[in-house]
Length: 72
Image (cartoon, rainbow, N blue to C red):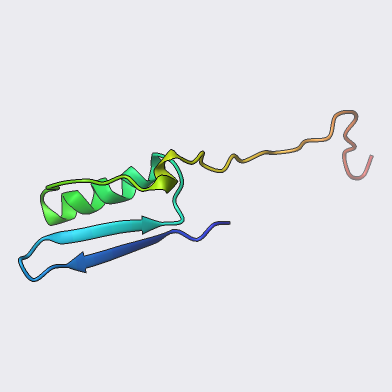
């Protein structure tokens, strides 16, 4: 599992700067949107290279064939 971090900096003029780390693709916007709701607004946004990377895909492997029920 990847580690996601949110770096929050409150600047002397009261602006809040948020940077996500370890979040790939558009998922990073969920974090910044959540924080914008808490702070009350979002003045600007810059997308990092990670935004354009594909998010990791989850693959579930289920063997094909017969499954046995315990006790039978």
